[in-house]
Length: 180
Image (tube, rainbow, N blue to C red; front, side, top):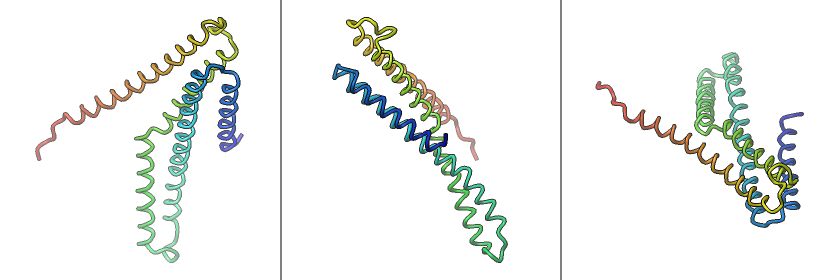
């Protein structure tokens, strides 16, 4: 399966699952809350995937173009133009690599997709009435509790990650510069 086919497969699979929620989840509050949350994770996963693939491709293509520019004979391309192109491509490559590192597109793509798949799995159990959701009287409340538990765990993970970044920033900011 090609990369683009895999992307369209994921998106089509997501759309089909969202339609099944609309058909099988009767409680409007649960349905709306679930669809909004799943759509958000799915869109964010796809967006991060797109940025990650673009930056990865640029990270492959730009150094290759630099090598090709270096191999062009001087009578076909002036040294000044060659140097300008190489400098621009090198700078752009560094910027793209830096942005990818700062925004963590690959890690976030995996995180958002994992959260979407966890929600889809829990929702499937809920819609089928299996596992913890066998008791019809308790299943709606149990499902809402499971959704809140997933959200709480995710928020704690984001807070932990943010606090590790802020403690690093404080550590870096607290250092004294050498005199000189």
